[in-house]
Image 1 (tube, rainbow, N blue to C red):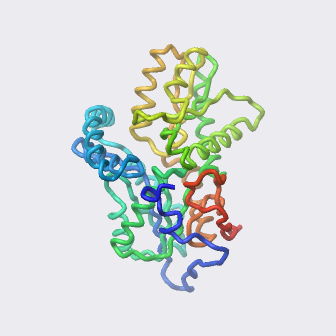
Image 2 (cartoon, one colour):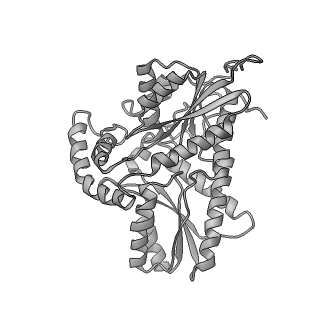
Image 3 (tube, rainbow, N blue to C red):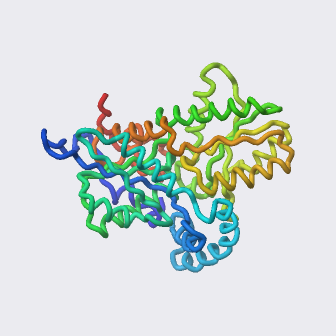
Length: 389
């Protein structure tokens, strides 16, 4: 495990034991308990002028640019400068900014409403990694609100040191800086949670029916996830394992009636010259052209629309498919604030809180095989208390 990149597994959060260490509920007649749910996401520029600083923040992250620390600032400036022009062109298609913050705020508002009740005042706070609102802003807001407890919820279903790991490390630093000390429950991943899988399969099923209604050729489903350099996975990052587990579970739901689907996992958004996970989405599109099948692209690793769905999938890959002669190109929308998806998130918060404070997966105990050394839960971590029925 690269300790510079990801040190939260052992040091930053106390791993749970089999002791019921939950704080007691408020006494009868007392004010509602304040639960701060901190939702993490990547972030995105909010105007053309913020595109370059957003890129600089991205490539200065040691979890992203894995080079010696004394080289990283210079290399980050070089890479960010080279990417400003194409990034500006992409964001121009979206009106000059990313829609991610607004969509995340919609999810946060829906989740707050789903969780709040007579005894619980639940409020979501957004912590973006590379643009405002940063973790420091979120931690300050949580402290000012006077939360009784904190729940850390990455809007990345699949754990990676490059996403959730980086966000949790940034949160820890921010919480220390503002002096926020409250009981914390951390959900590290939820890639095979039944509610998430069921909600995702329902969205795919709808778009599959819509595509079949107009397609003139057999249909292949491409589950497109954000890629990673193979070296990161080889070091023990569980991301690829979790992506493939999600896809298999979604496909199992879709094939529950006995139908056999034509489907494939692929990876998009390659950003460096290194060898990345394959097959790439571009390669999968080329294969579909050779096989003369239409494609339904499902953005499996994303739960909100942003540039990598609205531009990369909807514009760039569509153009590639047309150029290659693919006989039909369709795309499943991201979950955004889909009611089934929000209900799944609410259930994840409730079940995880019921197990106690500390770090957990959607199933409580470690969900990754032992070969994934960068799983934030150590091998041998005891299971949390079973979630209440």
